[in-house]
Length: 433
Image (cartoon, rainbow, N blue to C red):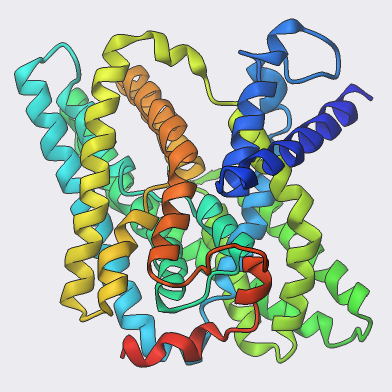
């Protein structure tokens, strides 16, 4: 009973806060995050009033299935952007930019934190610095997608952004696995090719295979149903199934086998949208169905931000260095890679700003990094950066897309309604060839 009351209060709180955010011209996702912080265990939740807010981080953790499911739908939606017709024009750019911006960001953060280690060795170890450099490459797809959906952003920058964010997950996973393996080797003196190379490659390959098979099966099964509601139900059931399977982990011959939830659901969406002739209409219905779940996702994300880290000056110092140089890495990494692939000037100028949000993927990496002797500082720095990026990232993404002309300024006519009829692909593909 209390769980249902807490969830309803969370949704009401997020929606009411979004009205205030609209007056301040902030994205709704920022309002949901702020509502989560206010309802969390360090604000209203601290009053311990049953049903009003979340009294502890454990209470929020018990609702993790909602967050995981929402991420599954987010990835499934992003997969819908990988249509072959569009990839023929933007695929090379997306892959090049997706890889280079992540690698450049990782190198920039590595250099800055290793330099900090030599200046003040007690602040951070080299192994922790290397690990944080890899975590810096990750970009949160959820906040980005929510801003795009809220304002119906259209144009070449938006299209490339969604493709790059999707590719970023696979690149970040590889960078983290390699860097974490090196960090463990520095601490224990043992280099494990299994951890550095084999396990991440297996995870990526199995995730893509599982997602591909799921997308194909979804299409085959939905051909036997003609009701829109039944096809919608099948799509939702498919994502539920993929999220559940993606949580499975097991060991085979001493090798850890697991799946990336984002890659599985993204690949399922990609295959489905390319072989199903009614996928666009169906994806629109899925988006409508998932809207309340996304509100809950961001409110819960805000509630689980641990505000106690703000009381630790060492974490704040390392965190500021991390945030500054990650932001520089993302911006100049995107700028350089876009210039190399001859992207439109608006894409080159603004893409890096839209890649700043960081959340779930980075937190998952930080959880793994706790095996290091300096794992606590890694976790706390990532928590601090997530707190900052999730609050300012969506607003910066909105400003960048608006400056690029892909979000119309809201006046008397609702921007979402004005943007909706524009065809993203035909609007910008001549600029990105």
